Image (cartoon, rainbow, N blue to C red; front, side, top):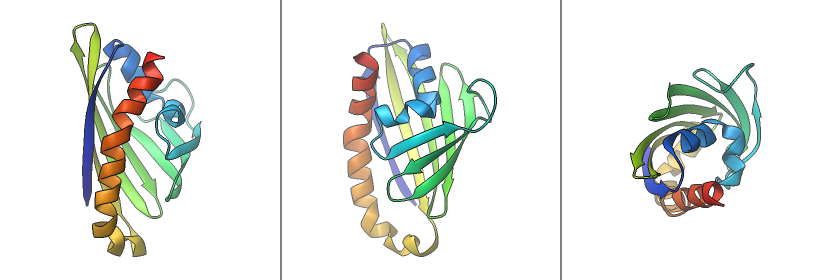
Length: 141
């Protein structure tokens, strides 16, 4: 299992940040690994919403919003043939801004699992160095 995470402070309210992150259709604005995101369930984004997206290196991914406690906590369960990921976000007010904390657990599946030790370091480096800053930029422009 690969564990990674990051933290950033964004100059927006917890509600604004929560809503932006919860709707994975915003993902390509701050997550370069995500593209072609479609909400496949009806209604507003909320607990149980399902998205399909293309993930670089893993292909078509089905992601379910499995934790939705607006505006404090948010979680996703993502599944693709070569990976399963659980991602958790916490949103805490910090003055007029919001501290966002992200923790992710990635499990490679199938034959890619043997590559996990080699991929772990690069995966952590990429996520930890870029995701928070990219989210901040997307929300503060």
